Amino acid sequence: MFGNLSDKLEGVFKKLRGAGKLREKNIKDAMREVRQALLEADVNYRVAKRFVATVQEKSIGEEVLQSIEPGQQIIKIVYDELVKLLGGKTETLAPIDKSPTVYMVCGLQGSGKTTLCGKLALMTKRKNKKPLLVAADIYRPAAVKQLKVLADSIQVEHFSRDGMKPPEICREAVKYAEKNFIDLVILDTAGRLHVDQEMMVELEQIRELTKPDEILLVADAMTGQDAVNVAREFNTRLDVSGVVLSKLDGDARGGAALSIRQVTGTPIKLASVGEKLGDLEPFHPDRLASRILGMGDIVTLVERAQETIDQDDAEQMQEKLLKAQFNFEDFLDQMNRIKKMGPLDNLLKMIPGVGKALKGMTVEEKDMERMVAIIKSMTIQERRHPNIIDGSRKKRIAFGSGNSVQAVNQLLKQFQAMQKMFHNMNKGKMKGMPKGMMPF
Image 1 (cartoon, rainbow, N blue to C red):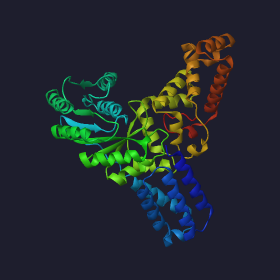
Image 2 (image 1 turned 30 degrees about the horizontal axis):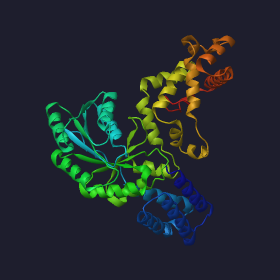
Image 3 (image 1 turned 60 degrees about the horizontal axis):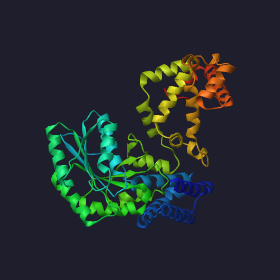
Image 4 (image 1 turned 120 degrees about the vertical axis):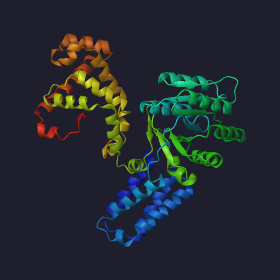
């Protein structure tokens, strides 16, 4: 997401940096291009106009125009205003501090409500809290079954009732939660293909009967300004407490993310960044602004690494690297950890400067899969001692992994080169590396 917007903003900033001393005309021309880029990204017209006016007003100040590097100062102004546009600060969910706390999830059909309920349940379980998934969507075919499958996959409790209307189901679910020491009740409400009176009345009834601590609206980031219009309608009727942007990892232009807070006044609290149930993150305005401007997002990358890398394991791995004792079993373990952190190309774009370097290139996940297949075709002895792999062993490994002998040879050469690099690297340089992170 934001690929085209990032590229166009980068083009504008490049002109400003190359101009040296700036005049008011340079800035106005640049801001005209920024406004056009925002509109093409499907940002609300009034939001784009107000944003550009604010940036322009601050950029033509005497302090900026007389600065040694006015181009850099304007980039800082754009960054600051983007953060404000996205909400300014990270807004957290209502705390799960009473039993039961109730989260009501609503949105249009197909926006990702049911999947979000599963993600919320997993996030709650990881905090050692007990969630209850409530199937209140009785209209969409297989919706109840889908929620049950999600609940079973993460081993959390599921609640449904045949023959009851959604408001009654939700009321009974809360009563059940009170008696069974449930920490969080997650109401998966029904959606429609569009906002209608019947839908809103039902949601209002659920709200009155359950008194939710959090009313979350799922807005599909792929729908652009439609998501903003939907958010406005829901907020008017339900007083939504938070928005969750789904499909933020897709190829949408990003207008919803940049408009929804300003148009509705409702904070974006969460971002769904993938299809897996663990792909749910707090929405950080400053980090998203940094990504939009091509500055990467190293903080999120480190957080993901910390979630998957155990401190003791990291120290053992660093010791192996220092002694050049790193083998294919260790390599396989590292690959599995990286996969848990998300798609490789998304991870690399979080590193400042790497996103630009990868422009126009694709990082093939299948290359990683091929390496994993080759390593898994090796015996334990071969993984621990790659030097014993001779011609006949290479043929067996190639056949077992569905690859060519050349592919096996290539992996072995890369691995040997890496081991040699570690062997030649002095300890002083190695100590400067983040623990557990592999330098390749």
